[in-house]
Image (cartoon, rainbow, N blue to C red; front, top):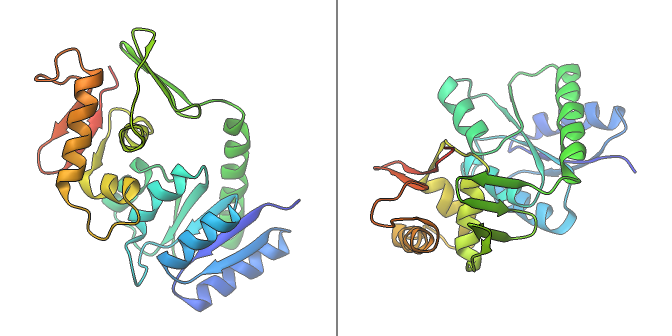
Length: 226
């Protein structure tokens, strides 16, 4: 079966250009022109890879990256935004690659093949993260402290999983809220604070002086990589 690619872009000409190149390479293509359609297709059809524009009319594409990665999808950003900060933000959120517009079709295909190979190579391996006394089996939804399983609520696990995909790197409040509460419009910061507080109570040696989940004031949280 050919790989299934979801092209998310509000410009019909870009979607058409990508479709022609991808189908010529034997790939199956679906199109979405906004974030809402992208999430609907991603949930219903589970494509192998998403080509994602950032300048969508209903939502910033960066907010979609953790949502799509949480579903196990490969994500390549295809955007006219070429600043280093945008690229770093996308990659830190879990994007597999970043291609700037205008793009060369052959280069894009090569990057798609690389991302699909990487996805195929990692799917069979349970994502296991070990940080100090904590081990996280992201595939099995199992978290242990000193070898003993710790019960987490779904939201607690979801927040921890997003942080664990970028250990040592800051994940913004906005990205965490979008990833963990995708169905809530403008979820309040208090949602996140409560979950992080509960995680610290369950996982930190001294919750009053957290060393595992660290706060970057006014920006977000990061999971210690030490």
